[in-house]
Image (tube, rainbow, N blue to C red; front, side, top):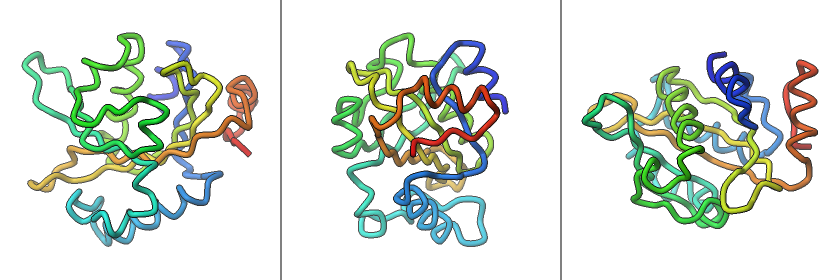
Amino acid sequence: MAYNAYAKERSWPSYCDRSLAFDSPELVDMLAIWRRAAGARAMPARSELTARLIKPHMPHIAIYEQIESCNAKPRYRVRLMGTIFAQVYGDLTGKIIDEVVPEAMVPRFHYGIHEVLSTQQPLRFVSRVDMNNRVYFVAEYLMVPLAGDEGTPTMVLSRAHFSAARTWNEVAEQIAAGRIPTLA
């Protein structure tokens, strides 16, 4: 997978897993909601994932939107950041990632969002949180594409489960051994 090769080359503590073998049952539930909303289509529209539908997940989600850029590089705005997500990353709602995230972290944020938009598939990511002195957290994320009003994928919903039960070194050992990383 392109993301994993890119992450390994740059020593990012992050892994993308297409198997969608989630440890967190909440991520399994969010994926089921997304799939029901999508139906026979590749993805649902953002407007179809109503607050009522995703209410139990709201504190744990962030929604990123691709925005126009004058230099042909994609840029992303944080459309929504739930309270749990904001406790870990800081409240970035309404902000553009490359303007508020530490410069060294911007490519990692961008590449994960790009991977979801380009594959137009749900993906599982396992990553160490490297923001706001929270490196003791390892997070499991479900990231899914969402269509904008015109029907093309322009947004990504990320549902996170943060854990301090395992260190990134333990997770990295699983990855190095060729196993799907778990947080359990």
